[in-house]
Length: 112
Image 1 (cartoon, rainbow, N blue to C red):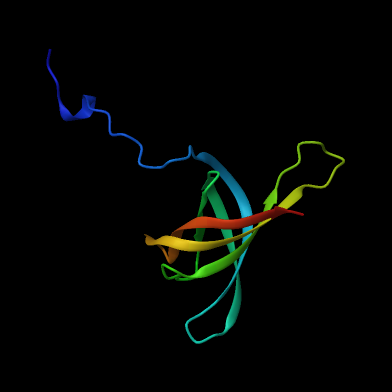
Image 2 (cartoon, one colour; image 1 turned 180 degrees about the vertical axis):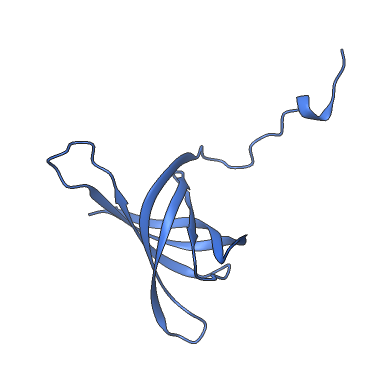
């Protein structure tokens, strides 16, 4: 049986499955000089243990962030829900055109 690299399966390193999404988010944090900031971001995937967001502000690994996600409600006459999350950045990577992707490990969350 022929075997090539494209046939091999690379095992998933994540311990929790990820769900792709596209939800608006607001990130609040504090920069290295101690100044508080608020930034608009997009949540592109999530799991039970983490989030992946894209935003315009450079963020450093180890930074603690507070994120508010607006979740959709498919009932047209009902408002959507929000989830607030506190987490720590475990990865930050440039995506070009000034955007940055960050992986956030969830420390605490609450639905509001």
